Length: 472
Image 1 (spheres, one colour):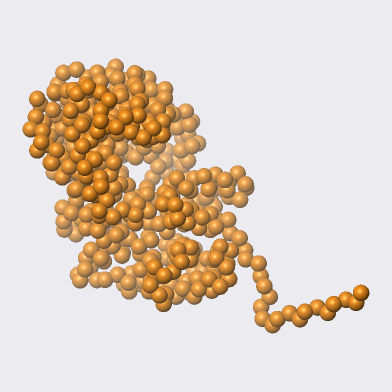
Image 2 (cartoon, helix red, strand yellow):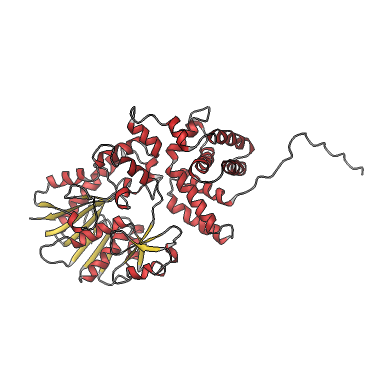
């Protein structure tokens, strides 16, 4: 059989197999999960990183870079969208979401990291070849080369409207927040330019990991013996892990004697526990206990006084998380799955009650940057009835002379002071207690009697707290 002649090779560059970059592929997969499944990066990323370590693809530096690419891209999404929109010849909504994710990752490397421009473009084009194909990789290459012509400051001058013409839109583009969120945060700060830019900038900073030493089970001194650990700023139980610190490597965390908990959440629990009380102090209630961080700290503080804690959570799977957080608590407690608006307890049963209500989460945008793009102003209307009903139920659960703490991880006035004011109008048998003296070392808590924590002032989530005493 005669040998078939070989087909002549077409002129041009020879085909080159795309180079797979495990770090950027993982970052792309995380962004797709956030976009397609409405997942949260803080839930999606850890298992992806764990699997990459187990297969030997990643070391600590790779994990750090992947984390920075995912969170940095999500935090600056609004800014990067405005820049990309200036570099494409179609409305941004017509760009396929996977292509937009690759572009956003590339823009973050160009404008938000120290990666050299040529390396950022080359790596992004290679990623596009792997996950999108050669055709769309050419589009990615063309767009990123346009972006690389200027730095971030230059691009912001081009795409952000001048502050004097439209201050809210200027801040929205420069600091990558939806315009309505900028407006809401500005109102919560009291108006005026002071503080708003610092707050928006703080929302875009990577938060430190903060641990809590649960009293009677662990001490702060024990946690400070860990590598990269420094004391918290405000809570006597808080320890911060500097960059690179891994909570899972801390023995007390693995054993449940300590936990990961923002210092703002710790301060809410401490303020309730320290509030002056008239009469007995034997029964405490956490009425919205999931996922269990505040309940675990409250349970430990209650145990020091011989008090009992009831931790109630509506969702059974979250009640399971609460039970896990409280497992080993040194004092008496019980965890139940119950709806706080339909109490499983008799009125006036408790001396101290915490109700940390479901909310928009605008106070935790550092930790969940994608939430700023998912929330809508109309979400406030969905939360409002539940927040009021939970507070009313909490006031009925506390005895005369007892204290209710209304808390929310949102500084939005519609979720904080408006809720408290509306409910207290219907409950003339209550008084607001000044919460600020209960945290004497913490500055700038507001004009009172409620208090508001801020990322840019306190290094915490933007937790709100109002303390209410039932008087009759």
